[in-house]
Length: 236
Image (cartoon, rainbow, N blue to C red; front, top):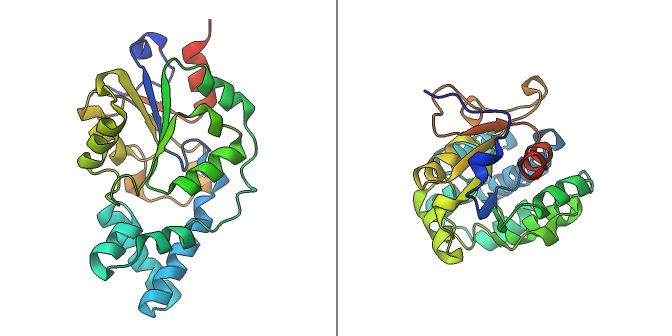
């Protein structure tokens, strides 16, 4: 297999007119660990819903996440829950850990074409996080789990839905993600794929399937610094 590049080559992105970014652990680094709060809220929701002990609820939540792409999808399929109630409770978090990142904002703003957030979370969550980072105004739109009819990435139909809704020519688009499996469909659609990787795996609780492996031949680039990567594409 061809190994992913780590240093951005501007020519590889010269054709890109639509820039698509995942939110959590992509637009902000993994070590911020904002998702830990969401994770705790989801486990509490499962425990309350099914009258489970905390450990049992967390194990079931993780199983649904692994099998269905999101905990929400697993709960909808198996327990017929109200998705809006779940999303509201899951994202009732403190965003103060996210600090303004004006350099990232400028790097996104400088990209030629449209910019989108494409998340398995909700629009309110994406808006709150992007606003805390000071980058919300640089995006044209947010495609969330509601717009996806609650079918999460990595489902191919969800990428098709996004592309059709926004009239994205995927052959002229790039996708930035932190989960390798969520880049398979974009690569198959002709998109340039960039995987965001944690800087120090030793300090982060992460499952093996969530990190890059030699079998991930659908990934064009790896980077642990989104701002530097984007800035290099428009420098000079």
